[in-house]
Each structure stands twice: as C-alpha cells, then as structure tokens.
Amino acid sequence: MAGSGVDMARKIDKLSDKRIKAATKRGIYGDGDGLYLQVARNGHRSWIYRFQIHGRRRTMGLGPYPRIALKKARELRLNRSTTVLTRSWRGASLASSRPSP
Image (cartoon, rainbow, N blue to C red; front, side):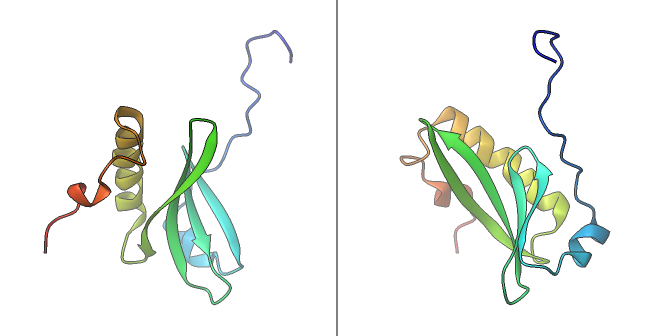
C-alpha cells in the first residue's frame, strides 16, 4: 500500500537444516539479509553473501556446506557485512580475518 508505511518487501523464509538437505535442485536459496545457499549443477552446495556497494552488486563466497554449517554461515555473513560497512570492500583484506596457517 503506497504511503501507508507498510514495508512491502518480500519476506524470505529462513533456511533450516532440513530445507538445506532437501535442496538438491540447482539454484539459489535465500536465508535473508543477503545470505544464500547456492546449489551447483553437480549438487555441491556453498554459501554466498550478496550485497550492494557503490551501486554495484557484489557476491562474496563464504564456504562450502556442510563444512560451513548454517549457524556459522549466518555468523560469517554478519562479520562480512560489518567489514563491508566499515571499510571499502575492494580495499579490505578479508584474509586478515582468517586464521593464519
């Protein structure tokens, strides 16, 4: 409704472990706040974080499922969104947030 102050954005249902395991068809499954499970043609699943910076859409890989569990993927998305908001994404060294070998 225009002008009513009601947010008309489409609500995305949060993913669950059950829904993730059932996701075998190629595609992208949203969890909300820019976090998505990407299922490849061969069935491999990985987490991606989509965001927009300086008017351009960006996609950041967060890691493969099941090595990166749903809870951890949500934490990584939150950490990466803070990085994107506080620093220029291109200039930010994401490797600095990873443990050194």
